[in-house]
Length: 91
Image (tube, rainbow, N blue to C red):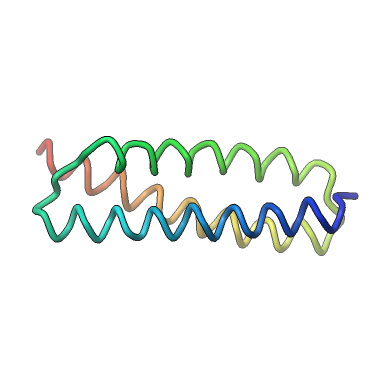
């Protein structure tokens, strides 16, 4: 079972990274899809976060797995949005 501290840390980390990703998406949309290093960094952090969530799921109980799954869905949504925005730039 994952510890309460590890779950709280993951939730906090997810919220911080998603907030940054939201900011970068807003900036890219406002600036006509100008992709910069901070945008790419936010994508990388989201991708790394997905892996961390998956790893934590292996030691989580059923309730924690549900919570982690919801976090994973949020992270995936923002990562997909960022990838799609970037792909639209290159079309």
